Amino acid sequence: MTPVEFCGLRLAHQLVNGSGTYDAIAARRVFGDALLAQFPFSAFVSKTITLQPRAGNPPPRLWETPAGMINSIGLPNRGLQGYLEHDLPELAALPVPLITNVMGSTVAEVAALVEAVDARPEIAAIELNVSCPNVRTGLDIGADPASLAALVRAVRPLARKPLVVKLTPNTADVAAVAQAAEAEGADAVSLVNTLRAMALAPSCGRPWLGGGTGGLSGPAIRAVALAQVSAVARSVAIPIVGMGGVSRANHVRDLLFAGATIVAIGTESFRDPAAACRIRREMKSLQNAETPSTSVNGSPPQVEVDVNSPD
Amino acid sequence: MACGFGACYGCVVPVREGGYVRLCVDGPVLDAGRIDAVPAHA
Image (cartoon, rainbow over all chains, first blue to last red; front, top):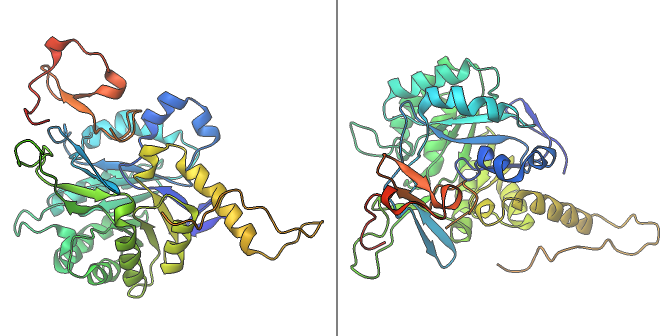
């Protein structure tokens, strides 16, 4: 895969991770320095960091669906200071640019996070998680173009680094929200976050997840993601990080065709931590298969895997 | 369990000292006395 420019960052290829779906510190503990030699992503997106530490939601936190999973993890993290002191030195050792994802429930909270993150040279870009209720309206900030515009307007001047807005699919008109982000100076948008979903405990009919509801991800949401990325791409000129249910090279290709500049792998990395490496190999085969043969013996290039098989 | 290597935070159980531990990397065997109440339907 060829290098790609994203918000002024030169990335070695088009695959990154979705925030919260790949813990590089845990992975390095398990896989050792081999992880650094063959890091799966061309940029690393941190899990969401909040101003104060969070323990996360009470268990159960996961429910499997026929083609995906619902999570209600609840953004456990050490808080801003813990992130800067404990996590950042380890993440800065990764061989790729670091994008730090932050979330706050008020403009002041987000502003404090953005300022602190922007001051750190180890961090290449900032991603705003706006799937957080507005304390005044109760609506997710990212579900309402006016709320999102106010937030981006307030924090944009505080950051010299590229600012990526992670959009929620749980809104009536994702393109309108993307346009609001672009109009207020966002450098890129990323989508989709998880779709709000619920599961009931078989024994008693109460919500299974400790958080009540959760977010659906995995193959089940890929067609939704494709439609939303396509709608946003037709509405904004800034680059798009496309994601949602990607597990094969042809899924990456679909999102690129729909208008994404780069693509994130999420839930599939839980099933296979090396999934992004496999998908990159598949993409090479896919490109070879689509390029007229230039091999010496004139035989068509061999495709290692059938990347066009139905899911 | 989603990942099995400490990345997803899906397998946590509450502990008496506060917060949660991940069964996949902090367990799978834990001192039972350390574990806080787990919801009955789980």
